[in-house]
Amino acid sequence: MDNNFKIYNSLTRKIEPIIPHEDGKIGMYTCGPTVYHFAHIGNLRSYIMEDVLEKSLRYVGYDVKRVMNITDVGHLSSDADTGEDKMLKGAQREHKTVMEVAKFYTDAFFADCEALNIKRPDVVEPATNCIDEFIHMVEGLLEKGYAYLAGGNVYFDTSKLDKYFVFSSQEELENLVGVRDDVEEDTNKKNKNDFVLWFTKSKFEDQALKWESPWGVGYPGWHIECSCIGIKHLGEYMDIHCGGVDNMFPHHTNEIAQSESFLGHKWCPYWMHVQHLNDKQGKMSKSKGDFLTVSLLKEKGYNPLVYRMFCLQSHYRKPLEFSYEILDNTAAAYNKLVKRITGLKEDGAVEQNIYDEFNGKFIDAISNDMNTSMAITVLYDLLKADTNDATKLALIKEFDKVLSLGLTDVKEEKAEVDAELEAYVLAKIEERKEAKKAKDFATADAIRDELLSKGIVIKDTREGVVWHLEG
Ligand code: AMP
Ligand code: ZN
Image (cartoon, rainbow, N blue to C red; front, side, top):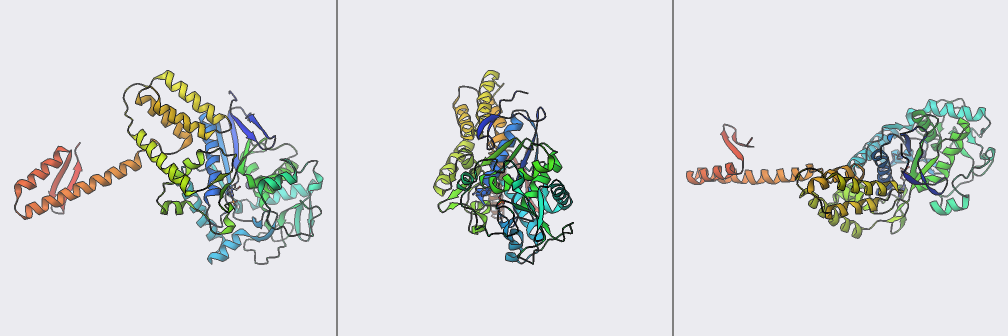
C-alpha cells in the first residue's frame, strides 16, 4: 500500500507518514469518556477530529479497527491519582448508583456522537468489564520489578525506566497541557511521578465499586485501563493512539510506561493529540460544572452538524476558541452549502478526469496532517468547477464519508417537505369539508381536482378523509 498518509506524531514531534505494523491494516485506540457527566463540546471536539482521522484512513484504503474504553472507575478528580473517584462524585451528585450514572452518561455520550455523525468505534469496552485483565497486568509488572506495594496500594516505579517523559520534558508538558490539578503529596510514592496501578487504600472509604485482588479489596488506577483494553483488543502492537492534548501527561505517558514494561517491547509508534476547545475563561472542563453540551446547542436551535463544521474549519493541532458569533457564521455557511448541494441534479455521466482531479485534491488535504479546512475548500472549489452536477454529486457523496456533514443526506430536508406537504393537504381537506357542509359541491370537487393535479389522491372513508400520493 502507498503510505502517503501523514500525521503529526507527538512522540517524534514530526509530521510523518504512517507505516502500520501490518500492511493495509490500522489498529487505532481512543481514550473514551469518563462517564460521570455529559460530554462537553470540548470533549466532542476531540472525538470529532478522531472520527475524521479514522474515516480519512478508511478513505485512503486502510482497514481500520478502532477501540475505545469507557472510564467508569478509577479516574480520580486529579489525573495524578489523588482526590475522589469522579464516578462516585457523579453518583453522589445525582443520588444514583455508580452503575446507573455510568449507563446514563454512556448512552448520552453515544447519542451526542450520533447527532455529530461520529461513528461508533468497532469495540467499546467499559473498564469495569476488564478487572481480571488489569489484575493480570499489575501482577506482571510486579513480577518484572516495575511495580511495588506501599501503604496497601500498588505503584508503578518510574525510576526503573531509562526515559519516563517520552513526549517531551516534564516542564514542557506541564506548560502544554495547562496547570495541573492540585497534587497532594502521596507519601507512599518512592518517586514523585510514580502512579497507582491498584488502590486498596483511599482516603475516601466509601469508594463504591471494589473487587477482590491479590493485594486486597480495591479498584484499578485510571491509566492501567487503557493499556489493558488496548492490548486486549488490538494485540501487543497498535498503530495509532489518540486523545485530547491534556491526556499526554500523565495519562498517556503512564500508559506507555506500563504497557512497554509489561510487554517488553515498543507498543504504539504514533500518537495523535487534539488541542483544546476553550471558552473565554480558558479550557472547557467537566469539573467546572458549567459547560456547553450538544443538547444545549440543540435547545438554542443549532443543528449539531454545524458544530462539527465549526471544528472542521480549524486545524486539530490549534487551540480553538468557542464563540456563538463564529457558530452563527458557520450555521449560515452550512445552510447555504446544503441548499446549494440540494439543488444539484443527477444530470448524466460522471466526468472521470474531473472526478479524479478533485478526489486527488481531497485526499491530499486529509492525508496532509488532516487539513480539514483545506478539504472543505476543495469542496467549495468543486461546487464552482466547470463540470456537470452528476460529477459534483458523486464527489460530494465520497467527501462526506470523511466530513460527515450530512451534505447529501436529504432525509431531514425531505421530512421537512413532507411536513409541509401534509400541512397543505390537511388544509385543503378542511376547506373541502367546509365547502361540502355549505353544499358548495363545485368548490369541493375543484379542490379534489386541484389536489389530483398535484398527484395527491383523496378518498372519503367511514373514518374520514384519507390521502396518498399517486403512483
Ligand atoms: P474525559 O471524559 O474527561 O476523560 O475526556 C474525554 C476526552 O476529551 C479526552 O480525550 C480529553 O483529552 C478530551 N478533552 C477534555 N477537555 C477538552 C477540551 N476542552 N477540548 C478538547 N478536548 C478535550
Ligand atoms: Zn486512555
